[in-house]
Length: 265
Image 1 (cartoon, helix red, strand yellow):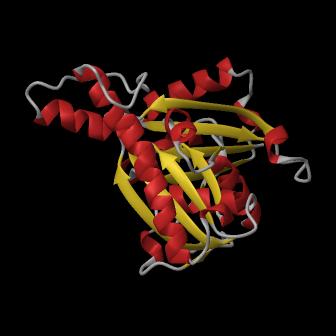
Image 2: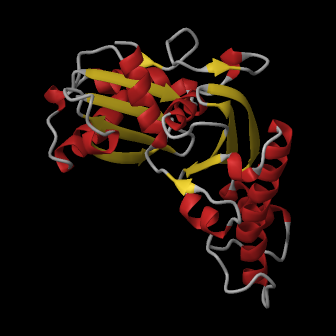
């Protein structure tokens, strides 16, 4: 079995896939997903304890893991998590970085600057599209990854994440307080909390729609020609309110990591 790990700014996510039946649909090969919060002050031993508890909770024996693949956007934690995983699994992880086989044609100014998470998302999305595509990822930042064709990454759009935007309002305005990230009953707020919710939530949805339209124009195609996929912790709160028809795929990054692992076996 394969242990796929993604080290993000807010969470470290794990997925375990069966690898003995590669012809089966990817969703059927997924054994479990889990995540823990990212805390740089934790030691590798602390992360090892948490990882062991996750395996126990999910009823999966660490010794059944034969391969590990890791993507990270927090370089300082990469070796820490490697060391934690090594206490259970004596296999050096395949780290998503420049030089490994992904099958992607990366058409940005400096391909080595592409985040490992965006690389994995693009690989995962390529199995679900036949033409141009946009992957909207809603986490610490809101990121649109653009494929001009399957396996051809043409560029990226990075915007402030919902949580960051909400925290900025709370921090920089004296009379606006912290609010839950939820959809209000109407666009025009009748009180401060609803006004902020509308601006954050509906504003983000409108921003996504506007960017999708601009991306389609730049690719010289119609919005209807784009495959639109979404993922990340806030995807389910935003894309249902977009006029663009997104398909939510919560495991897309892990699907990409699974594909990258198979290309490098």
